[in-house]
Length: 371
Ligand SMILES: [Zn+2]
Image (cartoon, rainbow, N blue to C red; front, side, top):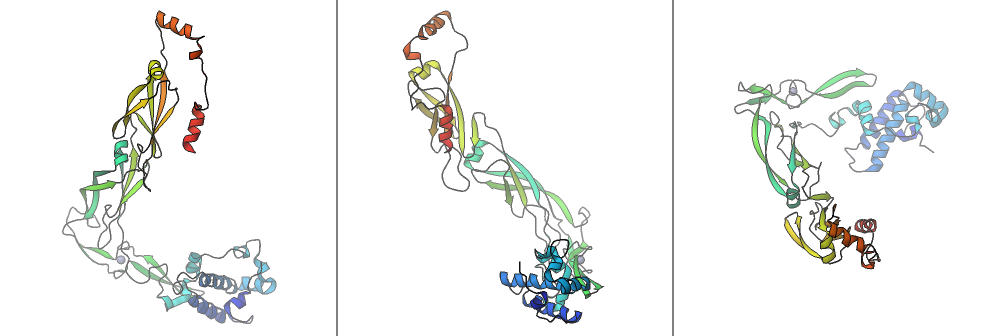
């Protein structure tokens, strides 16, 4: 792979001094800095290339190797990313962040200047739903214990970080003075500390309070799914923003209906006589009974599809179906007369199976269902 020369990338000559290399890199880094070129991949690429070039040329050992062997010096073993992949942006900022000095206010990582607002922690609950509730959607009222700011608590600006939530640490390195921002450990990053608080409040001025939260659950949710109720988690101290309430859905098993995605399955048992003579049956569907008519001579294993009697789709329009599986119940014991009747029927052509194409096997029907 042909790589651009590191000196060329920084726009300097081979004889450049350490100071000139640093200056050249700073210029390129500012020119292509992502804050100045949002959404510009060429600039980002150039920014990374400049960092890569500087990483090598600013290190006397690496520079000597590079001057002698070129890019090959770093191919394969160890070297700088094996001479292949690039540094990622985080690496660049953590290694060379200082070089930009005041050009970007020293603040990197999207948090330029302004005070951070601390977010309260999330709360988690489980909500058990019946299949009926899932099919229709439901509004659930749940009791949660939330941390809230105690009535009467007063906060003041943190004197350690002056309300910034961060403190700057300055260290001297080979590259000069290096600034790094760390979360203020006095206020925990909120920029505020307690001025006065009631006795029952904790160290952050918070108390626990029961709150009834109403959760609107849309139809079609699935077991294990998580819904978010914004701002119903724990409050944060000071002027922070509350966390969220995370609601995990738990589906209760239904007595008769089995769910499979948006479709429901129902096992219907009919007697041998009902199968022979035909019958009407009430099915316990999701929102009440549905009457279905079975033709005379219906076969065991037949699946009847009741369109739209399943579960609504969460993401699109329409409902799944209710699939009724017909099972013919075989008597487990017979009277003497019954036994004689069936023994006679053994040789009766009417009772001998003659499956036609329309009497597909169960497996073929299942295959059809999912195709
Ligand atoms: Zn502070």
